[in-house]
Picture 1: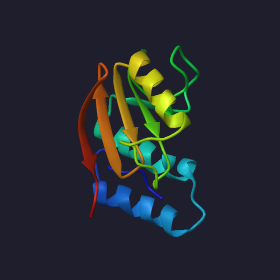
Picture 2: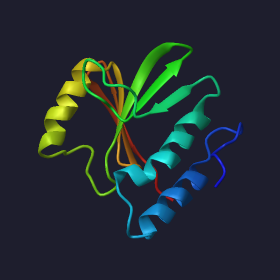
Picture 3: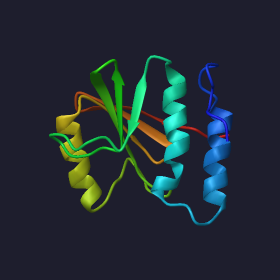
Length: 130
C-alpha cells in the first residue's frame, strides 16, 4: 500500500479507502487505523515529522506527536472508529482532560471525526465522509 499523497498533498480518498479496508475486515482495532492516520498526517506538510507512540511525557502518552525539526508542537489521540470523540466515556474522559491541560495543540480522532483543541479550547469537529 503506498503512502498517501507522496508529495502531492492530502489525499482524503486514499485515506478513506485504507480505513474502509481495515474496518471491512471485521478484525480491526484502534491500532489498525494508525498507519493510514500516520500517512495522512505526514501528507499535510513535508517538513512535518510524525511519531506514532512517542515516549511518555508530562501529560501522558498520546498516540501521535508532531514536530518540526526537534520542536514538538502538536499531539493526537486516536480512538477506535466506533468511539464518539466528542462525548467520551469512562477513562477516556479523564485522559482527555489531562491531555487538554498538557498539550496546547491537540487532535482527538476516531479516524473519521477530527476534533481540534487549541490551548484547551475546542475548535471545530471535522468529519471525513465520502
